[in-house]
Image (cartoon, rainbow, N blue to C red; front, side, top):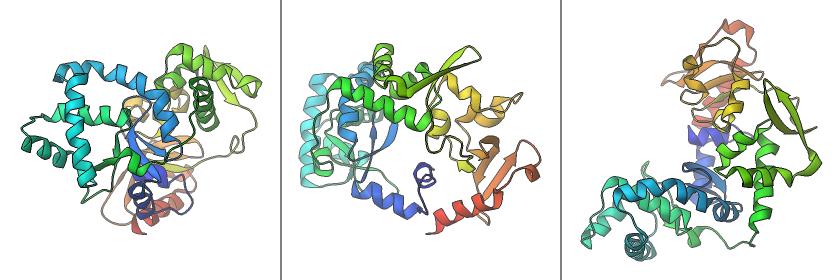
Length: 306
């Protein structure tokens, strides 16, 4: 489903195409922005990580303390991991923990997760080539070329531009949630966009948006995976996407269940099945009122088969 989230935003992309892009390092899978996995273009991962890592580290401090992960412990363990990855690329979490155990460094599962997140935030590791459905790790410097440094102020404005160019209308709180930034830094990024960013009020909330964007009036129909940016990219602003008078729990609050979207309207939920047409949709209303259902089923089938 994570690969489908990328593929559905491309022209005629397949599962294999996305997999190859991740394995080659064109797309980096790592913890950036708020503490969760993201797919990031290789050309953007450095400046985004340099901006967001301090916020994510702060957010993970509690769990680090819970498992006994101090800076001293991390540095000791990291030296071993670095040596192992220099010797053999594309090692899974289990591989790395086995190597640590052979050096009599015992690490439990939660601590291992926190160690690897910290290593990602410090741009020491990122995803490697997936092996037999297992995520592996590689040295960051081996997969990501050097790039020109960007100041924090410029990065804040650039991140705000990325967000509102692709996800507006959205509120300041939405941007904070998506980015993990503080309120002051989120507002600074927004202010840097100047008069190009417009503001409108709805139900007591102020929404910011770019006017006259290419796809502003375009109606979209797509099968969204669970945890897709279409819903997860917002906090309070997510409510405007829901049909009126609908129990949000039926839709997994728009996050926990894959959503069927037709002409910008949330029409129901869907799931992957093993036989033709490989998708089963649970509509909120009569399916006959929605156009383009067959084409969306076909698009998902082609993505899987190529």
